[in-house]
Figure 1 (cartoon, rainbow, N blue to C red):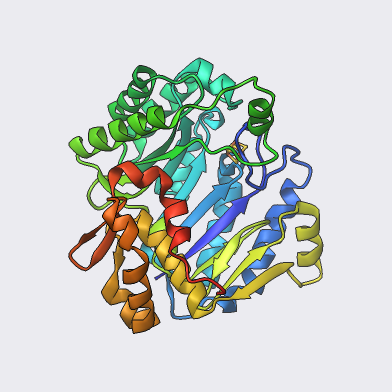
Figure 2: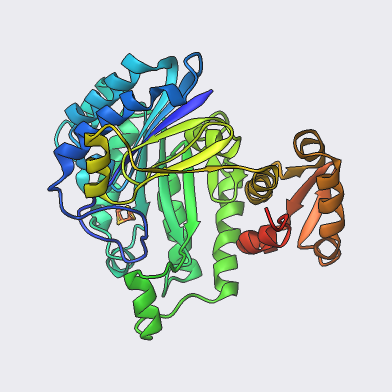
Length: 377
Ligand code: SF4
């Protein structure tokens, strides 16, 4: 199993919380698309020829800024160069304001079989606060259309927004459920350095939501979605049975993936690599047949640390057996010793052979994981 990811590095406008790589100028759009086609061919050897591609994923940035014809050219090039499974999941992230006549229908015809819609909120004032390009009506409209056309679609919601209340959050969750999506991703608003949001908070224009309010929203989300039949398979991910994201599952289970486009990340089983996060430099590298890529070969300790970080976010938790088999018995001993205080304080608990995070500590999972890292990796 393997996956291919395209990073489409363009957005209409910058959301105030976002630190992904994108440009609001479409000046380089056509050259970047051409370069992505070249990069696919240049790097095809990085995925073993026999490896079946089970997921093609268009993320960004905003892939729905591309026409269906542009998306189709990229899908066809993948099919020409790789062994794509007949039932491969082909996902495109879209923003509600990018819906246009025939677009959803055309995407379906060219083979996109899953949409992931960046809703974030159904409330006008919240969308404005974070500077999303769409309005609330567009969020409802696009989901109405998608529901009639696609059997498999996901939507994103952000919780912990400034000024949000338990009631406003509950409405967001209920609005989302009305559309019966197969998948929901819901992220806590994080304040990233150098974003407008960070600046607004520093200047006291906006106040972050308190920890207790955040936890109340998270608990409502988990309880409500589980009651509606969603499997909470990863901290931020909820899927109806059989509808986990194939792309994300590949990342989380150390399957190989090839990331194409500026800032895209790749993994071949041993080495992680990432493309330069600059459109002009990316184009320059591809034009001379030398993609600008940084690579890092993972040591056993690196892989262990990644497993801890990802495993604690996953429903199955961290398996002692897996650690022993993949990293050795020293790592198993290290972990068992290292978690004693978190077990005593009920931040972590054992579920048979698996180490899991208690619900009340889930918002702190990244810090909990880093406390368990093998240092000097
Ligand atoms: S649309 Fe997505 S990638 Fe673009 S700025 Fe907003 S959050 Fe970031």
